[in-house]
Image (cartoon, rainbow, N blue to C red; front, top):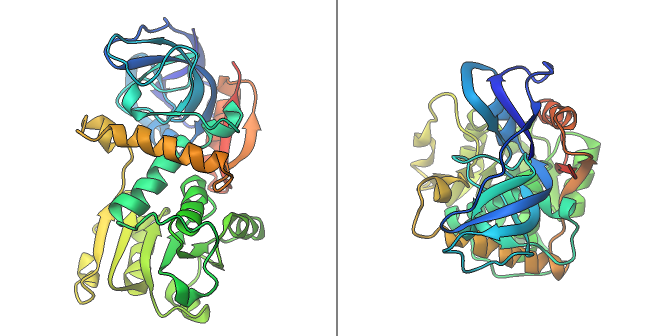
Length: 345
């Protein structure tokens, strides 16, 4: 099968940083599905894993953690899917990724693809959807009350500050927070095009993450916010998040920190801090792995009801090393809006 892989971890400008290769097609065992990949999404985690380092892989390593495709074969213990089903999923960071014509994935972390979407539209969603859903409804423990219309005033709902609103996770988190949880959403964006994007997705207020966040919140009429979701540069934004969060509020981040965080800033407020990492369930084979498949099915229904929309903003074709290097370079530049997707081998 065709695949895009690496053996050395090189700068993305190097043509050997990602290579077109031929690999053996795998066979499903246990609860695995063998999926024929039709489209893939590209995420910051791809860039982080591929970042330059001295390691040399003995065999080509396939990255990629977003896919939509068709089930071609199933393992003997599979019960949720059959050959021919259209599926979407983020996969498991401890296994070969989705940048290949065929991939094995545990059925428990797979969802039925939204019926109303193309493969490339669906491939934009899984990793960011799982991350946003788990962050909001499991880590921050917000109730998914399903409020299909935005709150009329800031006093009518609890509030959330989403730092990094125009990226892949932010683009889903805004929609879920407004349309599923009924929250008042303040999103950060630094450019006119990214501000337009987050407002179209439902953010009622927009502030600039390069400015003084607490001061900007006050200008928008917020002394503090009930929740903060950090999707960019935890080291930089944590002090502002601690200042902005309400007493007994909660902060969640998905971005690793490079230095110590002063969590004592939260003590007087009895506020909480928690991480979200969407690969936890598959990495540790947790007893509730099936929750990821369930939530993907639930979001697929919301998409088919036009409550939530896909966040694809750029589609490249075909799926090959040249186009994937281009997508990685765009993400490394830090100016991507929504999701970048590749389709068709």
